[in-house]
Image 1: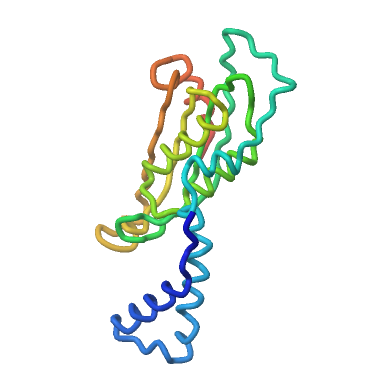
Image 2 (image 1 turned 45 degrees about the vertical axis):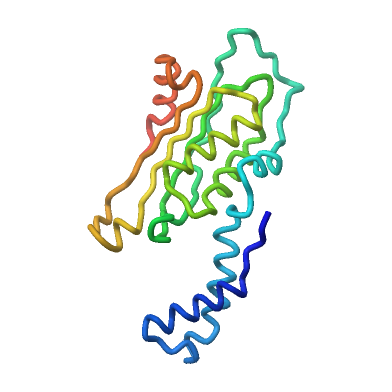
Length: 199
C-alpha cells in the first residue's frame, strides 16, 4: 500500500493554477493547493487498496443462524447506495450514483453496512462506471464465497453534462452479472422485480 503524496499534489496543483494563468499567491487561491491535496486524500482513498485488501478490511460475515438447504436461492439485495467517483479519462466527477448489490448467500451472509462500505471505497478511485461494478462484484465474491453476485449502477457523468456534449439529463446504467445471475432467467426476473417502484 502506497500512501497518497499530499505534498506532491500541492506542488502540481500550484503548477496547474500557474498554467491556467492564475496567481496562486492571491488570497483566494493561497491555500487552494493544500485544500485540493486534502480533498484528494479523501476522495481517492480507495486507490491505496486492492480488491483483495478491501475484502480483508470488510470481511464480516455471519453463519450461525443460517439454515441453507441444497436448493437455497434466497437473494439478498441492497439498493440505492449513494456513491460518487471520478472518471479516469477526464478526472471528472461521476455523481448521483446509485448502486444496487445482490447476491445469493453460500453458507454465510455479509453485514449489510459492509456492502455499502465496499461500494463507497471502490468508488474512491480513478474509475470507469463499468469497473466499479466489476470491482464490487469481485470483493463481494471474495468475502461471501458466493459465485452468484449482481451489481447494477446508475449515475451521471460530468464529463458528459458539464463539457463536451453537455447533456445534463443523461444517465448511464451498467450491470455486472456473475454466476447464476448470468443464466438463471427466474433469478434475473426476481432481480428485476427488486427494482419495481424505484423512481
